[in-house]
Image 1 (cartoon, rainbow over the protein chains, first blue to last red):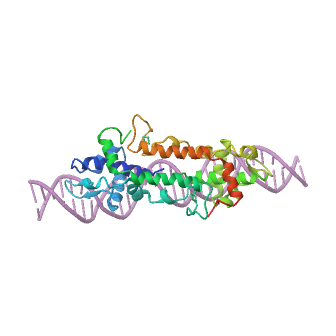
Image 2 (cartoon, rainbow over the protein chains, first blue to last red):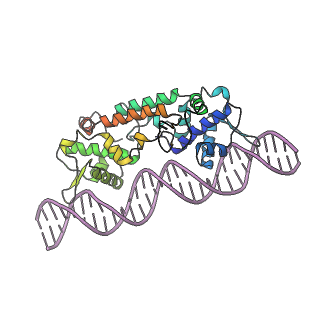
Length: 144
Length: 144
DNA sequence: CTTATTTCGGATAAATTTATCCTATTTATA
DNA sequence: TATAAATAGGATAAATTTATCCGAAATAAG
Ligand code: FES
Ligand code: FES
């Protein structure tokens, strides 16, 4: 469904958000430990999230990654997925035709489109805030 | 969403079904042309479909791939996807946790599970028959 | 200014998926 | 029985994704 890179990116963003509520910056090392991911690869993905304004980074001593507390509620899962996996999940043909086109539909177009749209709405309506709060309260988990 | 192998497998099965209605067997070459896929790779995927009893093959001269006319309506998309991509799409965690477990859910578990289940139901309720008939009647397409 | 710390970014490597090639085996027909 | 046609399947190659490594650049603190 999502690429590994995207899975790591989502989990990393959630973890950064939980720490940002406490005013703490985090390093790729700490993130990788918390979400059980390869550190250097995770660092690469964080760069993509920085470029797409999902998280911000501070270089140098006492630096790290953080998310502005006031923005956590307005960041949607769709932004993260889009930043890492692009928009093929929102627009691409389920059977790999060059473009998903109403006028030239593949055999599963109608049915696939419905699922794809539900997924799109879900991602667009899910904020980093609710995901991070569920982690903080211990009702959901980032690893194992 | 689906692997390339799975996309080819689905399209191949649909094409074989359309020809089977006319009592014709088809070769990997003809299939690859009709669904715009690499021939040898498609042949490999067909082997998996044969092993999983989605299509049957006849070796030797005048051989080829076919699907028993009377079975086309009872073959579901889910069988094909399962034969090629396995069941991770039905049961796997959206964020890559080892298992999707109600008692140890990832942050997107509830929302992801709903989408995943819709997809599962869609695949289980879609028969090769309806997909093949739509191709035959020209309302949907297997390539471009 | 120097040093320690930390992200950035390019190069490389490993693993997986996608794709190709070639031979063996099977089968219908002459 | 010989031959041609067709799938089966193993070995290999290419492409993509995943993962690692290392030096450059930035920054806070002494
Ligand atoms: S054309 Fe395939 S999903 Fe729309
Ligand atoms: S635990 Fe992640 S989807 Fe169920």
